[in-house]
Length: 173
Length: 173
Image (cartoon, rainbow over all chains, first blue to last red; front, side):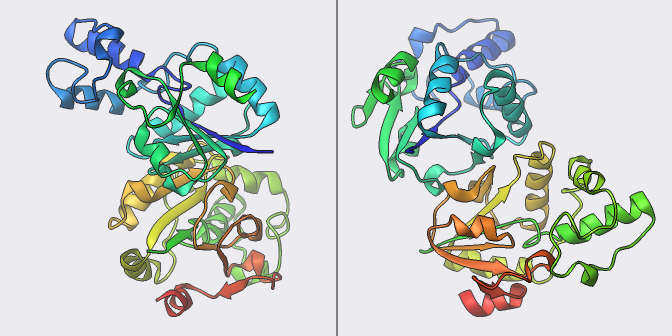
C-alpha cells in the first residue's frame, strides 16, 4: 500500500476562508478571495500583517474552519487504497493542536488518530505522495510532490498541480 | 548533519514515575519502580489497568512529569551536532498535546518548535538514529535503532541498549 501524506490548512480545511472571516470581524471589510490570487501571506490582506498573523492564535480559528469541497468523499476513498497520513504544521500555534485534532475527529470520523501528525517541519516525514499547498513543504519531500491549488501558490509552476479534490480523485484513484 | 529522533515519555520525561505518583494518589500505595522490571504496561501495577490507563487523560499528567536525569545537558550538546527532532506518540491523548508542548518549552528552551513532532504512529518519520523506550517504535524505523532502558523493556535484547543519558552521550558524542 503506497503512503499518501495530506496537508490540512488550505487542502482539507478552508484556512483562506477563515482568514477572510476573521479579517471581516476585525476590520469590517470582506476581502474577496479572488483578490488574493498570486499574493503571498504578507500581501493578501490590506494593512497590518501582524494582526492577521495573530488570528491564528485566537480561539476557534482552527476549530471552526469550513471543510473543503469534496474532501470528505474523496478522502474516504483514498483511505481504502492508500496508507493515509494527515500531516499538519501545527507546532507554531499551540492552541491549534487540540483544535485540529477535534476538527479532524468531527469532519473525518473514518480516520484513526494513528494517521495524524502535527509537526514543525515536514522534512521529517517520508512517503510516496504528498499533497500540500505550500511549495516549501513539498521541496523537502522524498516522494511525488503534488501542489494543491490555493490563491497564494498560483505563481508556482514547478510541481504537478491539482485544482481541488475532484482532480485529486482523478489523479490518485 | 545526521538526523537524530528522540522520544519523550520514559526517555526525556519520567513517565513511569508519573504513573507511580498518580497511582499512589489514587490508591494510597507507592509501587516501587524496581518491582516493575520486565513487566509490560498491563502488569506493572496491581489491580485495575483501566484506571491506570485513565491517568493519561487527566490534567497535568504530561505537564508535570519530572525531567530524566542528565537529559537536558546531553540534549543541549546533541542539538549542536545533530539535526535533532523530538517525536512523541501523543495523538491518543488529546490533552497531552498542549501539555507536552509547554513541557518541552519549559524544560528544553534551547529547542525550537520546528523540532517537535506529535504523531500517532512513528513509522512516518525517517532519520539516521532513533532513541525510544518502546520496541514497536524502533521496529519500523529506517535508521539505527537505540533502545533507551526502562523497566518495561528490560526483557528485549534485539536492539542496541542505552542505559540512561550518560550512555547516550558516550555513544553519540
